[in-house]
Image (cartoon, rainbow, N blue to C red; front, side, top):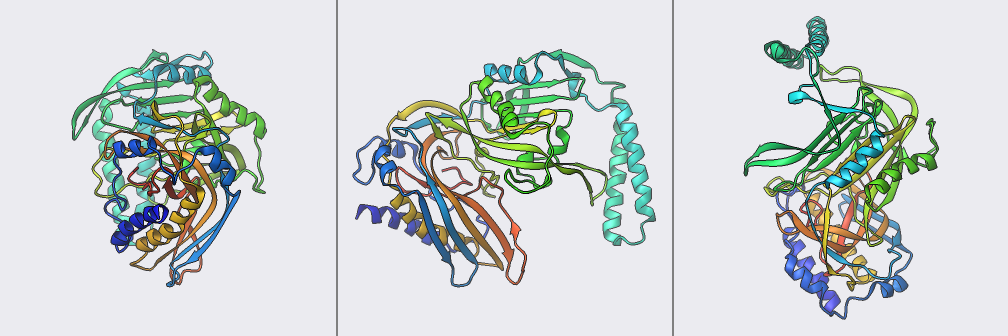
Length: 486
């Protein structure tokens, strides 16, 4: 009875909310109480078992197929089921404390190997000569638009107005641009910077280190009221793999394909050599990670930056490895996802899941994107008993159809979900809207999500792997909402 009661309680909560709009404005899963979850994890429960028993009883694969009566939701699972090869699984306190100085110094040393680095005084990287070149390009583009007789009038006017505003802005600020970049020598030590927010002023740590050869390392580390800590590195050729303002790791501009794809590929490094370069970064930093997946990228860059229809120029072949990592705690992988979704009405500090990507091309490490680092604190319980996989799949099979039918109940959308693996991971949950939480044992159903319109023959990819279809808390059987973080 206890097993069915776990599912029934969650199911009842979801039934009350399944009629929500297809894009929820508020979290659809009830917030979990951190203290209650800790108490649950440290108590005895006949429904939960030690990890070693779960390892013996869990099947190696999982199959499930579902289609809603209206055809809007299809779920297909032909998945491997993977458990950590450890004797126990823990639960830890976690928080947002940014990047430690010693870790950043180790990464700096690994990337620059003794090269001299600098940053621009007053953050002035844009010079008069750069403005002259941009103004020339913008005026040329403005003339091209004036002569265009095929573009729709409204669109043409909008683009011309935008360009004219940009020209006037450059001209108005021209005297403030330096004649040349004033370089200030730097090493790996953080500087203190300030910021303003709706909660008032704050401080953060920053490292901005560049070389004359074109390498750039930027680290922003927050320890109060913000989880937006990020480490970004770009080599001389790294611009080709970072075509989006957001992290390149979830961009489709570089035509990412799985490592074993049959596409023309050319790189000075073999897979083993490239992986060793990427792994070396974490060995130097003293961070235990696991390689989740490898993709191949094709270099791409903007040919034009001044008008709406920006065009991309591509290298002839795929020519870089994109390695995706997750943190490892006590030999157990932490759940990872590319999701950047948040609830519209969620006013809590943004705390997305940690993302770690390293790109290697023929020049070596070309890009690093490491966002939302998590600081692991004290152990709540070093040997947590968990719900068996049978209970997790029961929750998945009842809840996944309900959740996704609720999202597509209105409108003409449809979705196809494919689960390709299920892993027992540690997954970060947050304590309400705060910036503390727990690493919780979780059954994570990974896969892809495609979407389309009814009557639309082609399918469009919505998700980039790793993508979480559903996450079932292995302590209490509840759903962990990826958008809310609890």
